[in-house]
Amino acid sequence: MKSRTREELLSKAMESWKKTLADAASRKTAIPKISSFLRNYPDVKETTFRCHLCGGRSRNAYAATCQLLTVPQANILIKFIIEMGEKGFPLTYKKISEYALAIIRANGRKDKSIGIHWAQRFVQCYATQNRCKDMHTLGQDSHKGPELHKCLSPFHSPLQNHAKV
Image (cartoon, rainbow, N blue to C red; front, side, top):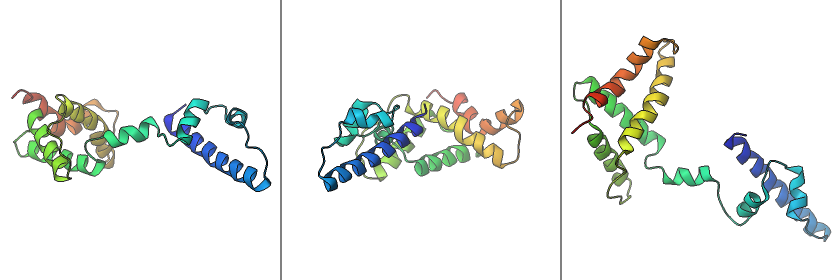
């Protein structure tokens, strides 16, 4: 089961639980046991449900708080990397890390550094995700190898050629 559907199912179960508690309070009846309540939601684990009742959050929600750059900030960095590569000044991984750290610090965070391989993972992630989406908007076929290489080359090849500082 995908994590989104799990989260949706968990949120539906939470809403239903709150309604059940409100009904029990208005009727002045006993609160049902969580295990019997969750029989209506077989894909929701009891321990996860109890954790969320106590204010816990999902792994995806936690991971979103750990992300260094927001999506708009990442897109700005990507455009800058591509622009510099097209102008003939490809950025090294070290420079990408420095620019990313400057963006992070501009937002008020006081991080002293980012991970050693952060820039490589950033390039790898966004070279496969965002640039291929841009290729579809240009009307090119995604299944053709040469066009895919052309799509990724402004972003990825300058970094591979100049990865060592």
